[in-house]
Image 1 (cartoon, helix red, strand yellow):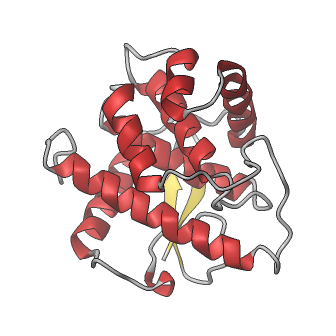
Image 2 (cartoon, one colour):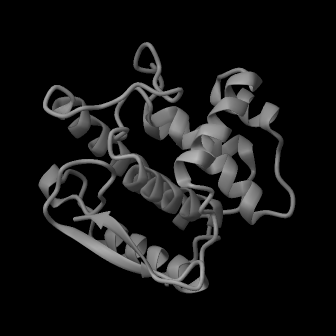
Length: 204
């Protein structure tokens, strides 16, 4: 399994997650007129000028959270979009969802972490908005934050495999992540987070 603590691996993970979220957001932007999508506190009035990759690199540079937080944030985004099918990731909400998921993952995983005000500054939003985003995200998850080691390593293995297979440019139909987009192909993980199995889906 890839060592996500390695300084050479983390940039690749950041690039992969950014590319993945970019493709999902663009796909949902196109499909927006074809399916019902609600407006939420995560939805900005305009598309942020900063790219998803630059935004995630900024978080990585200034948030100082452990590498595992990015894996856990990925899991949380996956869970969130499955529980909130009318709130798919798109260009208007992806940045706020990203900063919120990383912050919550850091609070759950790390012994030491920055407070909401620091994450708000990193994310370019107010502390008040950061607080609202955190609460909405937690309710959207149903407060399901626990991960078993098995679930964590399944997601790590999946990401490692996809990073190795990833080409510079791939078609959306080849994407391996499901985050609220219409896709008939999916990969199911069986989680055992609360003494019972929950099925999680990642896109293919």
